[in-house]
Image 1 (cartoon, rainbow, N blue to C red):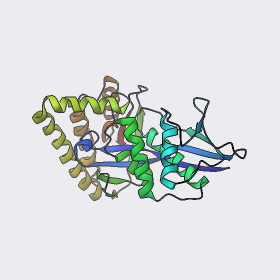
Image 2: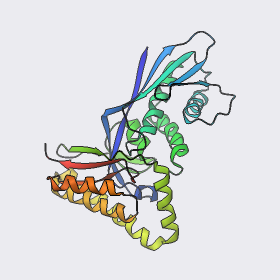
Image 3: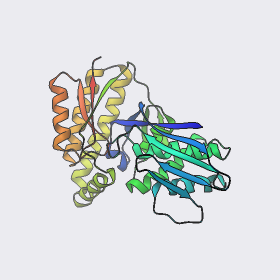
Image 4: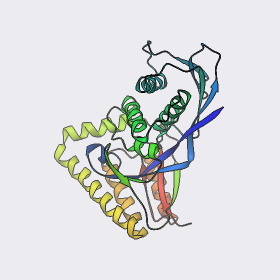
Length: 285
């Protein structure tokens, strides 16, 4: 038995605007992880993906067209490696809430890809793994920026501009982040699509909002790199207000943001696709 994993993630600044070429800052959340556990199967049994949450066993056949994201991910990895399905059972488990802005889909895809490659006798480079997980993200989200797969695959804080333009990010002082779950599940694909509709209907006005978010990301980067935590918190609140203007917040998120600020958080905002999912707050330890 072997175990492969990938972390959750949160976006500190820049979600949604990053889809339109603006920068964003994201960090992995190693306390929440997706796991792929490999076990040997009987000779000739082939590759079986066992989704623990659903209780389903999913056979992987390279010749079959199956409308299932996990099977498609497995096929994608095997074709990339030019390898036949190994006689292996891969059990998938996850601590990461789905549809909550924490990158659950990208984390599962990354853990699964690592497990399949290892069972075939390969180790995927981060660059290749990032490409494979991004393809899975396109299936989940339609037009993703690539930030989720990148921060999850490389497992480090990043300043992200696009799939091929990102760099490690280092805050000068430790950041203490509280994650608050609204309990509302909201697929990222829907909120990204709704922002696209707004953009097409009123390009000039929405572009101003996107530009304003991008500007705050750059200022936030400077604040974090110089240790100006107060400014970093203020910019989180401003970022949240701009996201609310893009209609991707929700009453539940707004209440959590206000509650966090009311009890002394330095800053707070929604994180991820929005309409539910999680709020993050910058707090003192």
